[in-house]
Length: 452
Image (tube, rainbow, N blue to C red; front, side):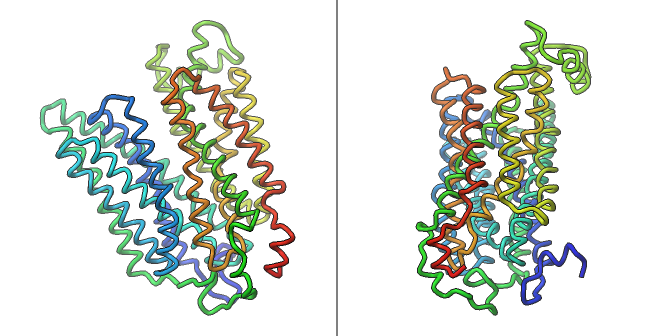
């Protein structure tokens, strides 16, 4: 047994390495479908409902899935097991994808929202079930490593999805221009393809032999502390603070990816009026990335989008892979503290508008936040036993924190989206720092009840 495989072995010598390899495909598909859908959904919304004021309904449909599904998914998994919980999430995801077929036929905005809602239900169910299962398939001290490594493949899939989606849209537009096809009818094809792909993974999970886990452990292992069942998750401060911290972290992540291109565009545009720090260097970057000496708004938008796709998302993915192996040696809360300090520092640099220095800070902030989600999640579900699924559900529900920024800037267009976003970043990273420094600790009262 090699060193990597040993990270997936339980105390009784049961190896989950092959099972985790299967879960990796699930994590990758999860991210790939998300990235692909992001591109397709945005284009489809523009086709079916060009009125941007209705974007608020798209946000509500998406985040409603994360608000309403986690607890039912946890109850379902408690009754029927993790394996069936995973299949439930995949089936809901596939259903949402297939629903785009009638949506394209009727060109209905309400059907579009319902399809998005079904996909969000599936994603919320998967997050609720897969993450804690990943944490439990091996020794407890490596649980954060396993979740982070799994989430790394989600980021990898999320990185590739938009490129495939962009290629599909390019081909569709080309065929429409030539008069060979109807754009609405053709848009159903990639969604059906996603649905088929998800169903294939569901079948793979169905025929696989996923070990059953009970009370947060293998069925063959009994709980060391039976009285653990009497300690409510709502009386565990480290869990409550984890859910609150996750809310703020997701808000920050949404801000970063939401205003990334806006910030870069404003930075490039400001150079038209006055020199900024590193002006010449920024111009070289624009010329090199844009492959042109032309300087205009279209070029700035194109360069900003390219940098987000390759640099922003690339460093985010690299950070998760690197962070997962750092977690083998470092305590999760220590990494969270360091990530929070660097993220807060980069946020301040962005606020100060320091030209090339702020450009570098924007690139690096996606690297510094990359491990926060899995670290917060794993710290929040510790020592939960049979309540692990329920605790997972509440932490996943905190993903609705991502709705704060886009909804407010949509409802109140007079707000400066960049400055407002930076305010959210500062508050959020202070919260994550506090959690990593103190909030993650199990209080004495809970420790005594659990005989820890």
